[in-house]
Length: 259
Image (cartoon, rainbow, N blue to C red; front, side, top):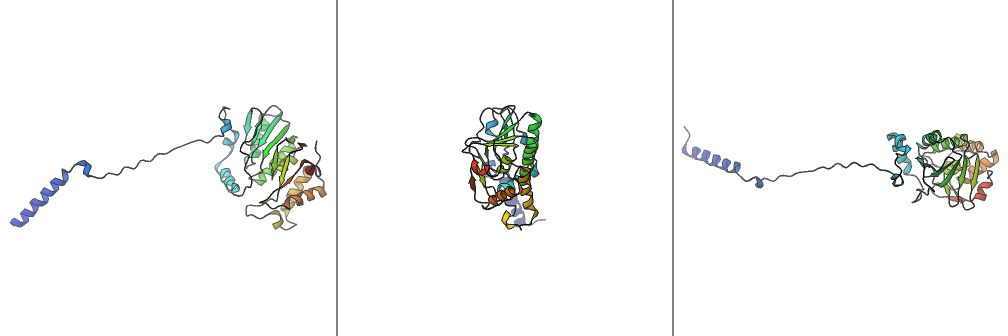
């Protein structure tokens, strides 16, 4: 049998437990965390009224996007605030805007996807004859840029820098790739040394490194003789990667024929 004092303690504890059980719900502090997930799709503002998906949306994969992010850390130029495309584009393929059956405008960077976009454009518009290079900052993938230059030459296209047009860095090779070339008197050509992913520039490589032959060979393919190809390559590499030297139409005419 329990002692009276022990029995009293039992009654007190039971009564206290009952009071707690009947406490108002608002006396309990409750924390609610709400998580909202937002999903969005990014489109080019210029495409809002065109009613189609850009070709590069289907061509870029995760690996390509990662590569471009890495290259973007070292790029020197950004496309102009307005990528001037004169006239209504019939279709767009990366930096290319098809204006009519014969003409495509180019504005923007060359990426790892651009050679495929160029091929898709030619398949869709086989009558194209010229590329007007409106605002071409260069390339985020040098291998893709050289591939694209050779594709332009194989396609037999004319390359044109219109009045107010600008081609810089790797885009100069694309202009050189034209079977025929034209440039307005005020066209600008920005050149500088190339640099690899480690920041080493052309002049950091030994003179007999095969990488130099790749560029000189490209210039030979584009119509320069051996002396002019080497002279032009030396000229571009005399300006460090983080600077730019601007050449005129007449400067370029020293190295290749213009029409």
